Image 1 (cartoon, helix red, strand yellow):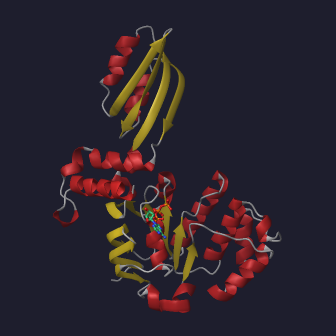
Image 2: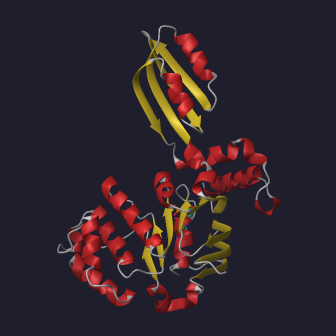
Image 3: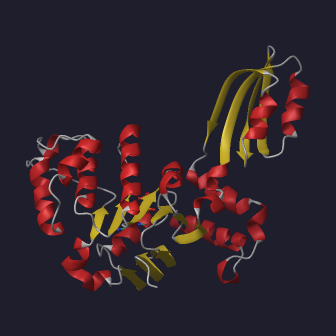
Length: 329
Ligand code: ATP
């Protein structure tokens, strides 16, 4: 069965710089597919190829069964696209701008635009150029969703949105999937992909370095932790934490009956929390590390030498990805 998106050996070079190295990706219809990766990984390049804003050096992309280079306006009407960098500067109001987009995108159900504007919280009577970055981004989201396209291609769609609006937007994405639409969502924020995506591909330096469902990638299971606890025997307490399974990179600082602990928990957080419980906990922070660190940790773990696709080991793919990173610099 052909996918909503089928990318085969897609290669893109900007002059001597290779942005995509023979990329393969397949998105199943009716799913949310998360494309995640650090800055410069090639997410925007991939998405722009799908809407024919840029053309690949070689390889093919099929979108809803068609070639984006020849699909023209008819194919574009079946797609809702939010570009990574949205520039809206006109004197027209949000209403007028969206009415213009509707002429291009095809029929929009009555009330759809106002309903989306209300949910996202944007005033469509104001001239577009007077809107904040976040409110302009909301117009970008509305134009992508308003005609209920079969496929949504969303490049970093939550950039500039405050957390409450981000949550509402992620709800819109899930509703789109539940209504049978397909969503390709790019992000460098792990948590929003975790909350929505059915399948994920991790891109690093123009290559897919991991692919699967969110849980199997274990990206989210790595967390940086910091705690401040009261203890009468800092040395013994530090040793206790040093032996705690799943806690690595432990750093400690002691003084005045207080012990500062920091490190990285890989896997369940429960053993760490239980280990803290005998002590008076004065402060506790648990945060996800940045995506780059998550990706590198994933490929540095014990499974690093397990065979992966095409007989290549995970470690060798990581090393190639890292070489690609260095090529960029
Ligand atoms: P970000 O999250 O920072 O937007 P990204 O994953 O979307 O990153 P791309 O914008 O696709 O990454 O860029 C991939 C690589 O290609 C980067 O190294 C970037 O510098 C390079 N690149 C992108 N567009 C061009 C261009 N027009 N000319 C030259 N190099 C480019």
